[in-house]
Length: 403
Image (cartoon, rainbow, N blue to C red; front, side, top):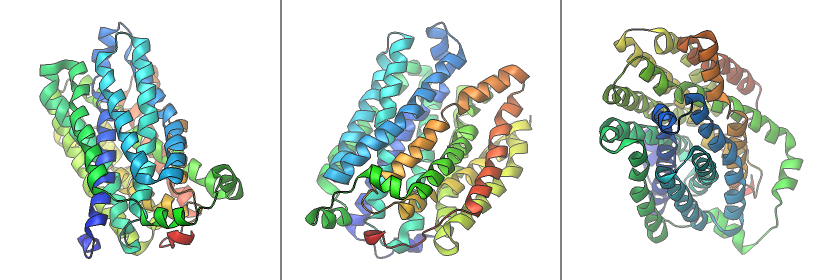
């Protein structure tokens, strides 16, 4: 796995580190919310399901951020737009701590979604255009593990600090490291070499023309990412609420969340690295199918030990499946649109999966079963992802300069 790190230059290491940290802190800000639905609902005298709509708004506005910041990155460079993007999502996440009412809360989380939407695509394109093609698999997993890393940090913040600072205070914690990341990018990170080469010979590439000319792969990627986002959000967003329903304390809940995110991080590193040797689609299909047996202990067990085993297992395979996506989408992206295409199709998938959490809450309230509300989504989506990938395209190892 780590042989992919050999021969890296200082420039490549800093680019990957900045991209990873940008997505990690972004994910941390997103996942802080899933731990405090009940507390926010109590303060604003509303229901848990109503508060959960904030995650839907965040997901709905992420495609807008992906498109805006992606186009800016294609025009003005990955590095400066990444810094602006980090500042925007950090400020709006911290602003959540000061919302006076439910309406303002929804507006702030929607604006946070615009900031959150851009970082993944910009960071992935900056990294994939900078590293050696032989390292794409490992770097893809490392970047995607930032999602689990952010969730892990959010879990630790909730477990350790919630009882001291409350739900408002935890949203202020991430502001300082996020803003420290900006000078790191400014002083240390270099621009993508492929972007700098393209800037010397500017070619006007319309994203709409590119998507129209490549409409089949664009539509396929949007459908694929809709399924993938159901896979991830369907196995993560509702789970803290389930554990609170089981009566788990904040410390125990946070500890379990830390463990299953460690499982997700290891899964990201392993499966993405394997995709470099055995192919993107083959490894994603394997991970999706292996996630199915973990659903039983994850959603239906009453034993804490089995619950931990199931949660670690399902996150290991779900995030392992996801870990190949940064490389896969960047390899499929039409030339001249890599700042925009991967992030936009990913976040459009988020848009179409934005009702996942409210749907799971509705299933639970309708059936009275937390277990089936949890299990139904990942079971169905694992099969759908397998079928989509089985006949889908792959551009493993493509030369990105002329992709």
